Image (cartoon, rainbow, N blue to C red; front, side, top):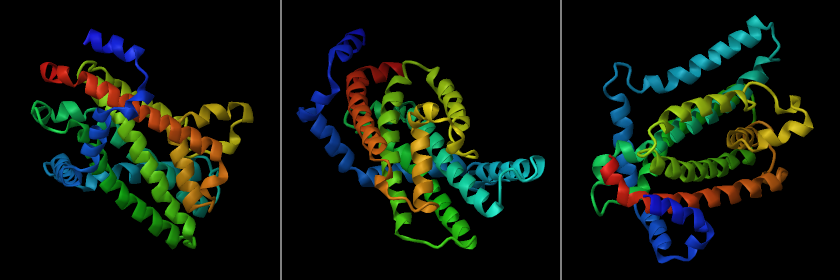
Length: 284
């Protein structure tokens, strides 16, 4: 493994796109939709079938959080959140994004350890495992997107074509989570503390993301710290699509930078996973 780490430090991930192994890696991802779907459904059922309330637990956490925030900002702070017709869509759109991001990242980061019995099979396509955990979280997220759309309609928001932009941000989010999840899931069998670190980092991201406060309150010179937060990119993307009707080109520099970083992380994830694969069996 030390030989792999030293070779990784000298390698350039961008060159990986020209290798036949990388093309096969991409083909394995694109040619396995049935496998990903079946494992995702099984993963979702296994997570909730043994609890008394089943899938109800999926909805309780964000709904309770929204209720607490409503109480704090409308009663405790005496209406400092502004009108409920503005506050509820604003906060709920942020919460919906946050819960998907954090749950999918947590699940994808432990995917190789969780499916150790499959990883030990010589011919199994382990590259699909982070995507399996993300898709199982995505199924729940789509329900929440539908719930958010119904809330907006109930509050009198008129649907428009900008609403469809949410699927663009959703696709980018899945790609980014897959890239990061591949890196983390490959490292996690060798560094078990990672599963303890991720929840701490995501909780910090919650408070440093404008979920229930406005980014406009941050001085211009500190905005860079918001923009390097990937969760900020997705939360604002959802709101720009559903609440503000802003086009994708409203901040092209940030858009291009984020896509470029996501592609680079995807290549790094490929390099790390394929390099560490021979060592997984002895660690799991």
